[in-house]
Amino acid sequence: MKILVTGASGFIGGRFARHALEQGLEVRVSGRRAEGVEHLVRRGAQFVQGDLTDPDLVRRLCIGIEAVVHCAGAVGNWGRYQDFHRGNVEVTENVVESCLKEQVRRLVHLSSPSIYFDGRSHLALREEQVPRRFHDHYAKTKYLAEQKVFGAAEFGLEVLALRPRFVTGAGDVSIFPRLLQMQKKNRLKIIGNGLNKVDFTSVQNLNEALMSALLADEPALGKAYNISNGAPVPIWDVVNYVMRQMNLPQATRYRSYGLAYTAAALNEGACLLWPGRPQPTLSRLGMQVMNKDFTLDISRARHYLNYAPQVSLWAALDEFCAWWRAQDRTGSR
Image (cartoon, rainbow, N blue to C red):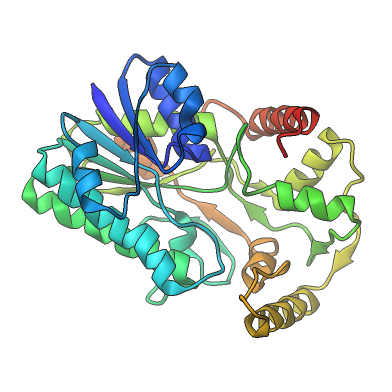
């Protein structure tokens, strides 16, 4: 099978492209910078440089491709709506249209469970529990991108969307690096009582889920799938495990949720007034994420994709910590 992986210069796209190569698939990758995918080219991937906002480029990327795994997108919780719309919705439109024009058989779209988030605690969220209003620009545009993907099914494109929660392992630069930096400065505090449970996903488990989505039979098509390790844990237990592995003091000081949320709101307000609107060091969303229960029901993925997470969270965290220490030694960060 010959596949295209978008976003291969990032963590999830890069790890899946490498996994697909190891499984014997022909892999084409895209990106703005060749250096971001050098490790994949060395393993046999074909690299095409360019920007996915260019529809002509995306169509060229899809020539001769059987399936696309679309991992590219705008991430974060700070910035202008038009930037998120361009990176998530418009780019996905280009991918969908190119798949249809070049008769690509299947599109596997990497979405996000952030679309469910409403600032409150939720346990065992199911795929259909999408709120009427979205919490931020990222959530809204990820959902709109999903709808573009599912809309293509009526034109014959086989589509699936995966919503993995808190993906971690070697290469993860989104979850723990900022927390490690805060603890080094003695600024990390437990928000609330520290008992809120959340889901994580080993990147290796996500790789298996994406591969299953590429190979799944007809009954699995046209659906969104929650993906996680299926074993919720208190988020602050996870944070302190990473601190121990990195030989840093554990977080033991507490801050009330109300106080933390107010401080974050003030920080955001100051950044809105500051020239250039820099990203705040504290955000209301961040305080909510670190304080609220947020777990997923993965029974649909188990049933239709035969998804059975094999790699534990703790093994994924060990992998991340070993990689992060190596980056520190080589001066890569």
